[in-house]
Length: 258
Image 1: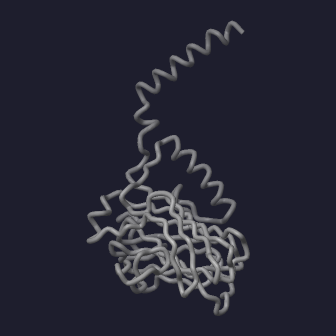
Image 2: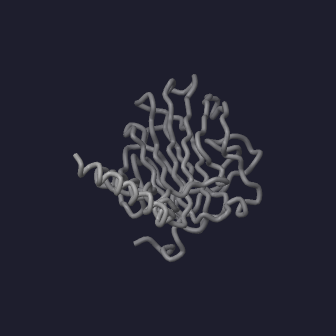
Image 3: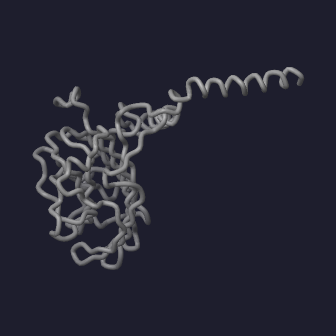
């Protein structure tokens, strides 16, 4: 017991000194990339076959950390809660977090390490490719298309530009999703998905249909572009979670994927 009384104060002093001398390394940002993380909750109202089901989009965008607002002629306002309709069917959309590229997050070093361990475990359990702690690339799992059911469409804007790796996974195998990397929305043209305008055309070779999970790379993305996710109105759960991971590819890795 006497040894404990001697060791505890010494350990406390050592921790205080370590924090004073090296705290900037332990609690500083671990890498130059910026991370935008947010959630979009969509409640489907009367008129949808999946009513009263809901969708939860968990979005992570890892990008170069530039001032993204300087890359948009008119920065879109992606942070809002609203009541809308699609094909005559209503929905309520709630956003949590910062999705307008005006704010980003850089994890401190010890948090980065803990997240890396947790996501490495998730990658091993799900078969995902793990080369970045915050942007897992899920395996391709195609599924039968859900007939001619109506679809809810969500636009997920990206903060960067150039080449992007993207991965999408739904936890409802009965409702596989379609995805497409598209040009930015046209303001004032009416609601479509989660955006204030209608998305432009798709980038060539950057689309996939009817997948439970998938990973792709798309190049030549201009500022204001994003991922369009189409969900069939055949949800089998009260809450369907769709995970979206996006990563701007660094210039040294921007060539064709291996």
